[in-house]
Image (cartoon, rainbow, N blue to C red):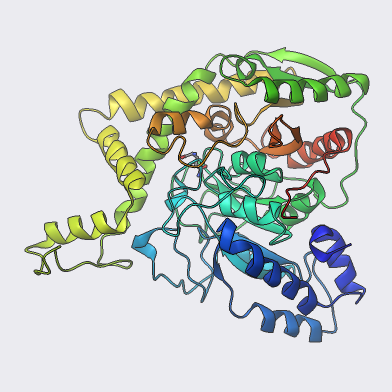
Length: 488
Ligand code: GLN
């Protein structure tokens, strides 16, 4: 078996038993990146010191830590001390943070190495990883298609075996949708369970960091390391999630699993629908009880999300003003010095932000402005509460919800780029869980007729990651999805 086929857990074990060295493992992934990344564009920046760090680990007598020696790819949204962290935006093009995001340093505390930084949609705003300072990332299953977004680089890197696992972030679906498009497992934890400190902010009431890997067990291992109380993030909850290592495949006899009916109507493609139906049949055979669930406010999730997320983004991104840090443009296109402060802001921000980010800043500023606040932002917050209450009702009746992640499998590069509304509606099945702060994940369950991976979404009550991941282990076993892209 080759190193990239081993996954995190087996690699760590082999390193602890000295069957492999950290240097060997890291070199293997670096070589694969060298060969495959020029086409895929999943990785945007390497950690220059990773081999030295791997060698230092090899010298250590105690091989402690649940991630000992595992090289992990990190979405470029997370600050990494001494390594460029750009959010794939021109405005942060030269930003080298003086500190590391808490969730990344927690991985390091468990012995993980930062392997590289991965491509993403600028400031995590997108569903296709096409709007990035570094250009589009490609889907390893079909390089004419998108890997999904915004954590497309992380999903593609794991799917192509350029890293055994990666960190992503999910504001409205950015871990689950690319995981689904690339055939990997991706977990968005309960809002507040993983610290947001050092994660470049998009929409603070929604942003959550989470793991992506080739198995449920590997995701659980990373999440175990990441979940902890951090006083540097005021919205971070004390740890309420049970232990995530050594999870067992449960019996699901008599378990009530919900199928939200609104997620199976409308645009859902035949291929995705029938893959989920197959899993439902297998679950029934195992004695699970599948119940239909009504989530009446589902259709409001996308509009509410795009009001809340853009409003928060307009506020969060106001810090990039060319003065405090980030890009600074002091001359106009003719090379003449800017006339005043206003022109300085305007030129810096126009050159620093891409079109999609500018669109969202405008939208958010509009919905927060006096005169429109009640009509848009406040109304959106009220409907957000209703969406949350739908889930609360639902979980009185079932343990977890099963649903599609996206209506279709990966679409073609360029297909939706000029139609923002079509792009936004890609998030139709992922935004409701984000608005409600629920843990939710994507699990690969099969391929469609074009040989593209299909993800199943599992959503759980808050802080029940342990139960959600155990259920995922069971479904992973039933689905027995073993296919890999050709580049594997
Ligand atoms: N696709 C959604 C958006 O464009 C979600 C992004 C995310 O989760 N970061 O906002």
